[in-house]
Image (tube, rainbow, N blue to C red; front, top):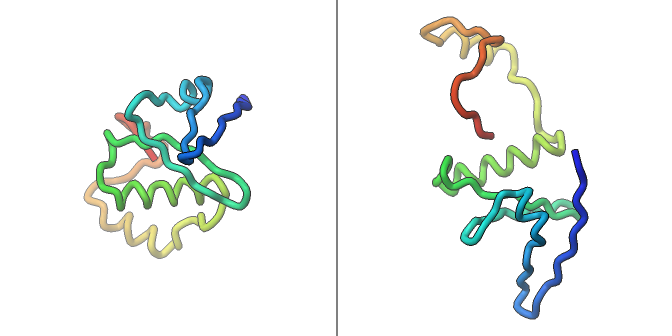
Length: 106
């Protein structure tokens, strides 16, 4: 993973201009929305993808889940009895090695 070091200055109104290199990497343009997650002494900036999830509750949940995955917190496997129960209720078999078709966004 490459590292980009860029500095932005906070204005008297509390605004910043994202440096061009950061805008490019995040793929943001005028009107794009960003999420700021503050953890310890770090701020994580993530682009909001409105096309996939318009419900703010889902977007908030996915942002929280993403933060947990990145930090390795609160992530465990499903209890075996729950996994077995879910598999038993499937109408068709499940191949965990099967390729996923279409786009997948987390």
